[in-house]
Image 1 (cartoon, helix red, strand yellow):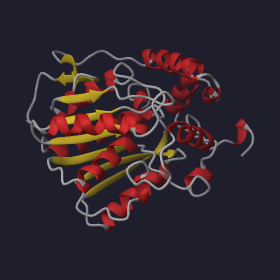
Image 2: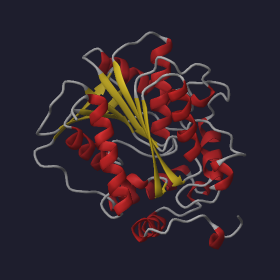
Image 3: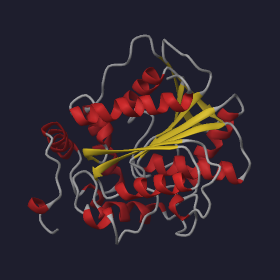
Image 4: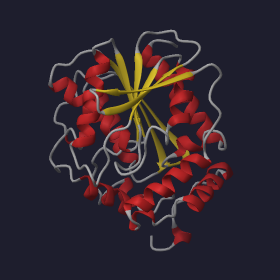
Length: 306
């Protein structure tokens, strides 16, 4: 596909309007701009899709180990002592505590659980494993206080799967579930959805290649590329959601299949009209709203609150 008119596109008006609105803030060729410019555009995009906070939800910021910023979200109605650890997306290059603030608040509220998000170090200033190590350090800190479910979107989905694999390798217990939201897990850029959806709206295969190059993770490391893990048995239950119009779709699809084959309890849901980053469209697109409600229910099920 070499023209915009031939790009694979959904037909739902709400998600098409969302995509058009996104490109007004974050152009399709954003990765060709400077890192500083990419972050400015992304921050503006996130601000555009901000949403009111759930009533009586409180936030508290602190630093883990004196250096890693985290934010605690405590909804008015908490029905479990198990916490959600949320890792934001952004290609390992953009994103912060602010970029996913509304998403985290609504997920905590809907799942009726305290949630902790992390502001891990970003590339290219900090290449792999800096951000990964930050997330793993926060995971260890949280597990010292009780059980945890780990969740993340896009690059955050990659980090979620990776730290869960490392926790298993190191015998770290207490992770009761993992939720992967349109995760990038290290699939073959020349095949499957990377080829079929190479020019999909919101994220292209070229974008994924760019983010991998910037991150500089070892190509054979399963913590960086979870699809390369040889053994997925004995991992915690998983809720995995993908977008149909997304080059990383098959990463989610294939990882879910391999988890199931390894005997892991996994729920897989593919949003038929969605594009990458549809979480931000949850208040404007019927398909995204439905997907978000299923995500909240899936996380709550992992927590045992539903």
